[in-house]
Length: 310
Image: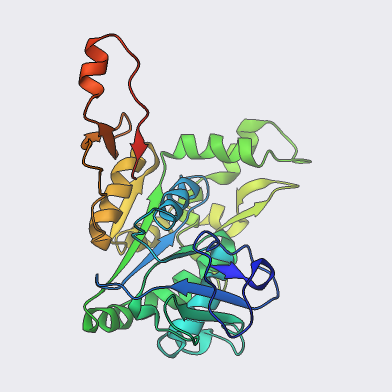
């Protein structure tokens, strides 16, 4: 993704490969894609707060700027609803209000005119923060069967993915990220108000509103009063929602999650140079290492730097 301020002009395609991350704004935006010989793919990443979603997004973006890109674009959450409505508004129904997808232009890298089909590309879309997560649950999820049919007819695939975290670790991380200010009581008192926090991020309390809330300047992450009264009753719905994702990862095993996404999207494997070989990194990811590394270690020299491909 790129924007008018960094060199794109309204109604034309942006030619800057390294400016594909869009940070929002009320100006014309361009989604920059190319026609692939590989089948099209659409990854829908449901980014639950404090579970490692930002690291997953960094990995996805690295797959754009590689010398041989494996993805065309990564759509950040601020533009997720606009992108889905601009691309698949007919499938999503009335939830795509008038004008939601305006200003977002989809271009083919080799085309002279805009409005290329996303079915020609391999795109990842992030859904994060309350409004966009609720949009996914209420608008995108019900349309997934039809969306999968459209991609299957084009020989492509739609993949849904999310990451969850061990509850206590999740609570501590949220407390450090958004320390409550002006909240009476100590940490234990605050923690009692975030029971079922992750379950509440998978279920809506009412239209457009999740059970788990965020008020960084007051209570930080917290469950609504309704949620605290229904903390057990929302668990079946949260579990049912979690079971609908194609890939579910755990924060402590993020490398395994990324490999599962790579396999699910049918991404081409990383290409190592002729002087390199495939190896596993300490974190479990696939990397390219110098074939001379073994001889270097035998001589007591420091290993050459790894060229991470994931």
